[in-house]
Length: 258
Image 1: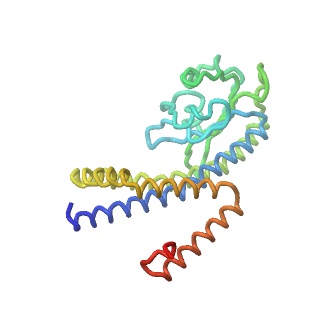
Image 2: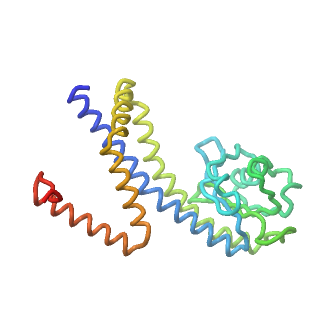
Image 3: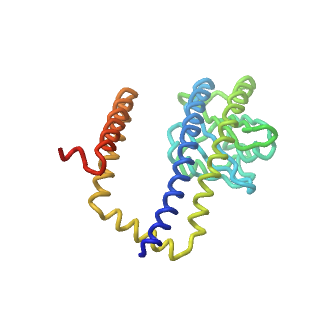
């Protein structure tokens, strides 16, 4: 690969990585906030099982954005077809819905339970409305404890609606940030095939290098240290910044060789 092509490739990669990094910086705090608010609201409504479903484009399908409970990991990313289930009804009608016997309700979408092995008895679902647009559905399932579960009450529907307003605003922020991430994917997809082949070759050679392996090991160590607490993270940042400043002062000669 010529130096000119390599420079173009490096420039493309830098722009792509920067775009993805920006999108992650924007989306990760939002999804964390949604999950924490979901946990708080579920505790207030006496359940351990709850989820946030977001509308997928104009199709009307719903996708589990986040969830808490015994099958949360299985739910995240799963889709409910347009108009299906209690969540689909709430999305289309814009009205909250409480069901005490899900299996006996004609609108219940049993495929989710079949896929996860979970047994849904009672559901409280409210629309996530941002301004005049419904962006998703907030669901609470069963009560904490053992069946038969007490049904959700009209007062709890009102309380859930208050939480839904806050979560809907966060979901709207998440969707806006997600557009940035999707744009970066489309940018990569629009690249010339020869560019993609060169990019794959370059990445493969990079991964095989011992320097790359050492950098990855260093990144893992830094991540582990930073995750231990605010004090450790602050100290780690100070040490790295001090080392960089000292290295800059020494020019191209590593001060570690002294």
